Each structure stands twice: as structure tokens, then as C-alpha cells.
Length: 340
Image (cartoon, rainbow, N blue to C red):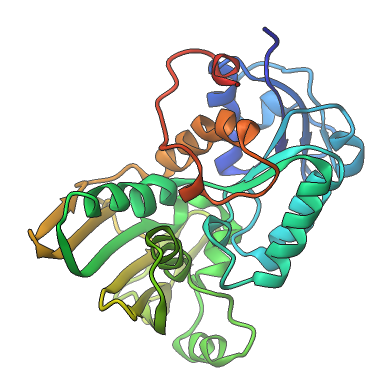
């Protein structure tokens, strides 16, 4: 039984953790891609802090690396389909399965339908699978679906979650408007180019998995203004008092069947001692509640993507979202043991 061959697409904070996890689960890393000039030509093992050379030099030529015959690419570069489509398209065109941490990719059929349909068609022609995974896979979609499955009747589902922007690198911190003035934030928020909220994709996935029909979708966004100066490690800056440390999105979908789903999600720079939360409440018969306490979101984001690798390779061709994959499982053995 041969090892799974993988490509690391994006060499930042998240793929550094994912690289270690894949190696510990028997994955053979055959290539690495980065657009950062300071990383190109360096060994992946050294860049990801493993303390030893892997014999894999980071390249800025995606086409060359994707031609190495890998089974899958793990992508950790950006958050939205508008940017993620380039990497996903290249993977599909080269016949390489791909799983991305792009938050919108968890269920992009409603927020970026044209991009998703195009990628789905390319992947089907190439016989590969494209998937979005990460922390939201289980904590915000499948764990919630399981909880809902224990109810007889549901009137509303309400989720609250927070995550530390500093855990995900400078690209995500910029997306969360960290360091912006209140005026600059309001200007960004009112612009027509504002990408979809992460919570919208979560709720879209839940609604689709239940076969419900949305009749209204609303989003409200408010900045998190820091009252005192706050270091933003991912950007190497100090956010001054009165500036933006991140923001909160509140998404709500009302369905024709009567169920209302709401998700309040905050991504911001944390103060010392703060931790991620994940809390869901279901009103109905019976009333149900899920609270995960302090959640290690950065690690679970990476571990869920790695555990998904066999599922992605085993899945039918196309853009396959996580609610259509098997429930996520712990992988005690090397990952090649779970290929069908």
C-alpha cells in the first residue's frame, strides 16, 4: 500500500501545522508552493519549523509542482472564492484533488455560484474532487447537524463563535480589517466589493443539508473597537485604542418551513487570557444546547483538514461540500489505510 502524496499550497502559519500533521500520519510531501519571494527555494521542513530538511524546495511555479503526480493539494492561502478559485482551478486542471481552508469554500454554491459551478465542471472533467474544510467542518456544520438530529421539532437554531485573528496569519488579519480606523471600516463595509460573510456559508450549508427553503437572508456587521492599544502579532503592529481589532457578523436565514437559523461570529485580535468559543442553542422540542468551552480553533482547523484527506480522495469528482462527505473520523493509522 503506497503512501498518499501531497502538495503543500501556501507556506504560512496553518500549513506549517498541517505539514507536521501530514508527516505524522504517513503522508509523503512531494512539493510546496508559495508566492513569497523570501520563501522560494528554501526547504519546506526548515520554513515550517520542523527542525530538519525534508528535501522539498518551495517553488513559485504551481504548474510545475502540480505536475509531480500528487494525490492531493492542501491549500491555506485565502478566505474567499474570488481569490481561491485560481489555486483550485490549477489543481483541477492538473488532475490533483484539493482541500482548502478557504472559509467560503465550506458551502459556496449560494454566495459564489458561477465560480463554484465552473470549478465543479473542471473537476468532473479531470476526475478529481475539490473541497473546503477546516474548523467549521464539524464545529459549525456537522456537529450542529447531529445535535439537530436529536430534536423532534425545531423552531430556531442560534450559534455564537469567536476566533483569534492572530492564529491565522497576515492575510486573514487584513481581511478582518485589523488596525483600520472606524471611518475606514465603515467605508469598507459600505463598498460593493465586500465579500460574503463566513457565517452565511455555514447557514447555507445547514439549510441545504436539511432540504429547507430560504425566504430571507440578512447580515449585520459591527466592528470590534479596542479600548486600549493591542498587539496584532500576525501583522507585526500595535492596534491603537479606538481602532478596529476585528468584527462581528450576524447572519440570519428564515425558511419557508418556519425554522430560523442565526449565527453570530466574531474574528478579532484577542487580549491576554481570552479563548475561542463555540456555543449553539436549539429552541424546540426539546430545547438543546451545545457548548465546547475554550476551543483550540487553530489546531482543530488543521486536524480536521488532515483527517479529511482520505474522504476527499475517495469522494466522487466535482466540488463536493462537507455535508455530502462521511462524518469526520479520527485517523489512528496512517492515512493511506483509509483509501477505498
